[in-house]
Image 1: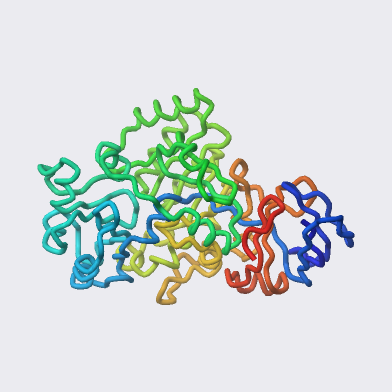
Image 2: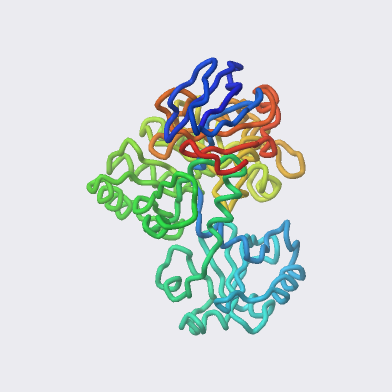
Length: 425
């Protein structure tokens, strides 16, 4: 493909010949016989976006799941209406996602039985780590005696009993391409890479498993985590440890200090970073993959639920960068909205849904926010450039570089190119 009359982010005008990798960047290039030509007509061309932490199957499944978060159903009555009017899928289940205690308090099988029809229902907490199943569902799983119906997502003992349902991966991939996403890192624990190899995903794909690990505060075991990290490293596998609480981060830092660090080790989320953990992260040299979109999506709940003295610890970005910590961005879709441009805006303005500011000291500029979505799976914190030899994954954005950075709006995406082929126009 030849892209003509492109404007690069620094304002330079250029033609770009791209195959699987960028071949030539020059002031003017003549089309070769049979070559596809895209006239950018002065539009901005940037390296495509890489979302460094997603859950593909869960995100695709969310397309036909009932959404029961605070913004979707509001309260207990809304939750009951959503579940009782839902139609079970082909597998016989009603699958609901995005639940938070703000809707109807802590959810267990008893409460769910009161709210649901007499068909199997499972409701995922918006954190992604927990499902609550009603009594018909527990009977389907052979767990009728389970005390509360609260099942951890990472527990294969129950999820293996579920009938596998077809999920619209191709539809998800098209949506992400429309956002300008050319690469994806799937962060699902225990996901086997070959289960996605024949999928309809057009983006370049990387899988963190078998190095991904989710921690739970009620089961933190430093010695066990050290042994797990050492075992992965011994097999040449970097680790990616899920840390959404201060306790999880503290234990992870201690475990990495003891087990040693692989140069590609990662801390996922770092939702809470106490001041006394910053130097520890910097000393380790690990990469923090975080999601500033949660400030924009859930910030008002954080302001209400988290003590004011801890607000500055939430979803930190500027402080980490200033400390020399490697940082990359992701959306965590479907547990966060899958729009990377919204995540960038969240990092720039730190505004909650009501417009309040959360963590003003953590704001970064738009160019930095964009760059944190432009690494590769192997080097997430090194932004790609439009130079020969770089991957042929590009995004054409309507407007000038100044306009693009001023708005950070997905609606400016005019074309997405992966490996020299247009996948969204």
